[in-house]
Length: 357
Image 1 (cartoon, rainbow, N blue to C red):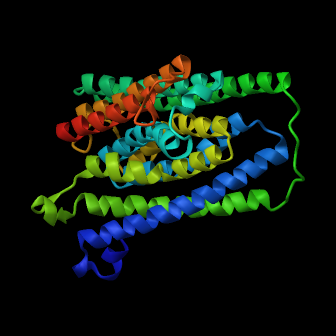
Image 2 (image 1 turned 30 degrees about the horizontal axis):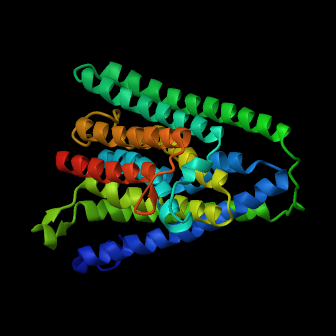
Image 3 (image 1 turned 90 degrees about the vertical axis):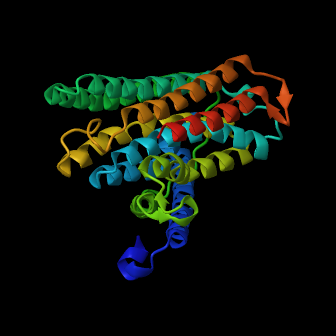
């Protein structure tokens, strides 16, 4: 994107890829700092680590997805927005595989998960399913835009309401467990914690905006290796943006596992997926402000591809939830059987989606 402003005649696929890489690095650094500051704030307030992972950590590390979705809606790249949201949800679940392979010495971290993780994973499935129901309903009433508009507005309100209710239930569950356990020690509060959080959050938002704008340019840019064919917005959203905006979740989860805090790591994964779905109402607002009355209809939206993209994280989350309950002891290539299934499903599902695009 900067190349288009500074040297528009010499823009290349390589320079765009480098620019996306630089933006992704800024996102990682900023969001990692933000996660650490939120963790400190939780210690100052005496909050439970699982709740920090599900709400605070998941929220701050999902800021790139929010900005990516808002920017995509504003520039009319709806497929890229949906691809980034659903692709990020799918990739977030595969972070469990990364935690197992790199930091947990093989096996499965899901064996150590508490019931609270089942709660948040189930709520994630509920919210993704609500958005998919909206996609199918809007497609059914293709000739009646008034009904389509009503469905989209009701879905946006329903997603926000569902998220608030789910967070309330998780908070109550955590408070019940905290009361039954030992008292948490608080650290001395610092007046600089909240200002630092705001500053680093703004940097995260700016970097995510840069990443999305560059991804939009790359989506329409002819690629020599593809015979001059462009990647397309769904591919860029599902792969490049989804993975790049999930980098903060990886960094935060890795840090949590390193300090032997699996509750926070898994809470970040499942909580991020819940928060990611709130990107859709944000995308609706920015698209409407840009003059696009309907989000899930028109030439910029591919219902079948987005349905496939949304079904994949539902399937992956269900497998992860089953892994929490079953607590497998079997290993394949140092990984728990549940991790192997997650990895196979993610790769196969992504391949099917790309083939359908």
